[in-house]
Length: 294
Image (tube, rainbow, N blue to C red; front, side):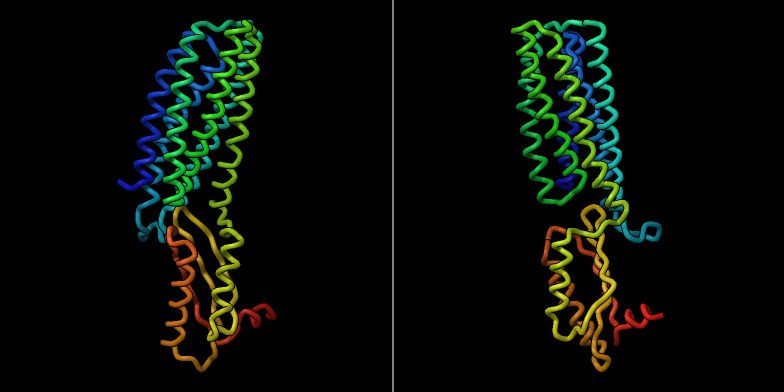
């Protein structure tokens, strides 16, 4: 099992445990804040399970139907996960408004405090683990999962504080305000996930600094006169690079091929963690300028 798959199994299991505990206490206590956290954990569980299948499919090799592989499944998963998070935030906001209108009260506050304490400890441990896997693999899905659970740490802490305040003051409005605030924070946190996923689906170029480094590698090769049509994009753990290199017309194909291989090796060393797919076209003259004039 790959580190990515293992991470999704761990996060799914943790989310399932937290969901069961929070739902029971949330429904019994009537706390919007605890219920908000419980609903978020339900979504965490389903999203993590979905991520497992997304990663499983994205790791399949390219074939005659998917010539470039299935790496974009991770970006699609990120968009879907962000959308689900956004919808859950809207639902929680509705629950907070509903409690404020109906004047509902919270119960079993001591039990709720114990549950939220356990939840914070478990979630912080999970975030540390997911961040480590995300750095090792560069997986967008695991990065999204880590960000998701990081927001859970903040929301769990906010719920914990609100429960303490309600317990000592008896002011139920605190629970409503915190629950509503959590819902708005959840909606805000979904924006980055959706944005990153959409940009990958639209074939956004890789980071500008990496593009500059690629250009420098090409310029530093003496036998390359110039280059054009440099294109980059990412899909999951794969990074695609396409470029036309202009050589002297008298160079042999063998020498031009050796230089191209040398450039490929240098580009791959920019980030050994990435799966680089590099396609270099060799030109005997700069046909880009000629085509531009036409």
